[in-house]
Length: 387
Image 1 (cartoon, rainbow, N blue to C red):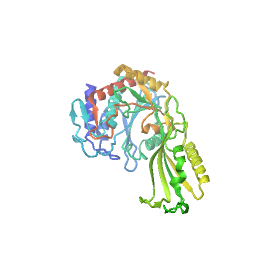
Image 2: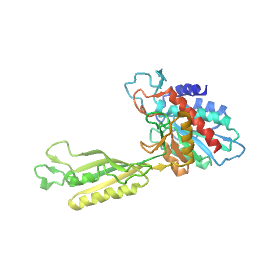
Image 3: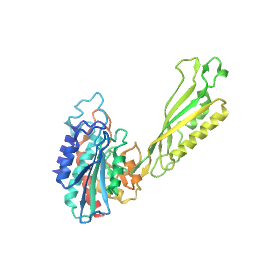
Image 4: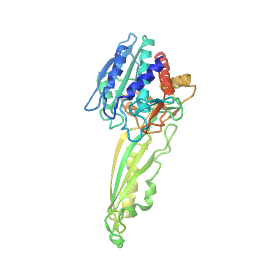
């Protein structure tokens, strides 16, 4: 019965057009369920971002040593054109429920909530604090989302010790992948400056493209470390190159290169800067009149939860019990709000439904996956309360 109620609640959540950072009143039905179960609800809002934190203390201890939190977001990316159904209609067809945010990540939010409701009743005497942290700005800049909420929770002495972010992590079948970390993300802009001139008089020009020449291969696609058990090699990926006036008889005055580096802890931002500058200093030394500027911005730092942690062991055992498969740990993919947990000392991992239609036209989630995810989270909380 609870599994069906979870699916029905997901359908309700999908009718709210919560495009980042709009909340659209979606927290009201969520709070109604949690308040009825004895949770305290707290809004941690700033500017256009609305964050909801709900918590309950089980057992007799006023502040248990362990505090588990489900984290997630209710905001979604814009819809786009070409949908075959109403993107906020929660249409059910052939065992799927359609809607923007179905996989990313309102299915996870619904499963978290119903698992928390069950555990609050079943494990009422366990010395444990349970909570839920939701934000309306994960798909956007995230400045005042989870990162800001955790700062405020730290001031209130309400920081979790452990967390699961219910992002869609699975590839082919529910239970195949746990994200036990993520790579960081570093964005770079390199501008190489020369001297514009007529192509017929190359000796009077200082062409930045020719200056870079054979050194381009030392930047494009270069691996900056060898990777390890948890992380693939850190690679510099050029995403854009442009220079010149789009004519055939004028050499460019500058060449602008934009790139991204998904980095492991082995290659921090400082190492990326040192490497790129070493290449460019050599280029400048060989080409009189060439100069460059380099700017790097780290939008996310890498984090890792060790595969032998109790958090992963408990979740893996719950997945095996419900889904009958053994999950693999992975740090692939983009960034998520789990990246903010490490600096607050929160042990965090990610687990959720399959991610084959996230951010796509006709985003959908399999109903049986939603039901299974709820059961996995319920089994996890039962085990976690006993650890």
